[in-house]
Image (cartoon, rainbow, N blue to C red):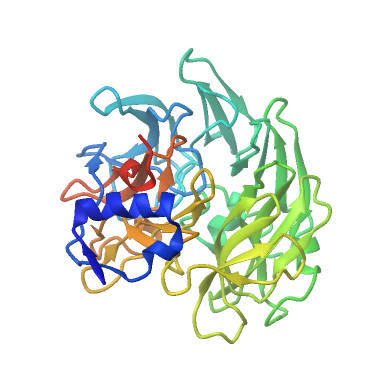
Length: 423
């Protein structure tokens, strides 16, 4: 058995993967005192900075500018009049913070849906509120010109022209930390309303259409552990890589607060609805390609543990487990460009509450941890800090959210170029 020191180990691992493949990796053991890739904190206190979810474009196409949000408090639910600053970090100018705007429609887990507009090298989009409704702002960071779209967004199409969005008022009612406070759900007493669900937004004209209703999805397929008093809602939406379909979690909440979920896909007009995973146990997901989805689920409803599964985009797709016992089964998944690596993380583990973002090499089945990040116990529930790892377009960097010493949540930049062989 070969034992490798930390720095040469990484170089050697990269060499083996690129030249000999997975067979050459058999029998290699790594010491506990591994040296993690270079990491630096790119935001500073006293204000707190974070980005939010893992499936949004945080880096601009050049991988120079990193989006983030700034707030003056932590450890409580946001109120409707709490305003956060929206900005970006210039990695080539001493991590300078550049303020871009502000928002009063945000939450701790996903911020204000701030993201670079796909297909543009200079435009960003985020959610806000204006005159009694949620809206979205589009800003050109080079020219300073902006405009308002009269609807919020969740996921944006690869060409940057269309968005899909759930009803954030309903989400706020059933899952604080993912909706926006301030506007009560007008369908609060309706368990599966016909005029609430998923909306398609034309980002050029502002036209908004309801394409998939909660009433419709509540009558589609079989609802595991069906009860008459369950409350339906949608959360977590994502366009397919080619923009032809979208994915969402159809969730239902029981009177005791517990919830189950199904993984659902559909065309952009709401047609061809497919319940891909219907066992009630499904969580984080990412598209691998237009026809396949990597998701966390249970092999069967009675399985004692969760896993990461690749499934085809079809009704009642067959689950194929990936990285069993290696790839964390509770983290936030994404594929690096080229699909050779999966980026993931963990929730706080052990008495030290350590979170571990990591890379998983698909061909070899090997995992490389990118660091250990302590999350103090005060970061729990709605205002917890999941690392939600996001990668740069050039695949050189990973950015995470994590508390930093006594400065609260901040953005941390991890240089992974030495791992995946980028220069």
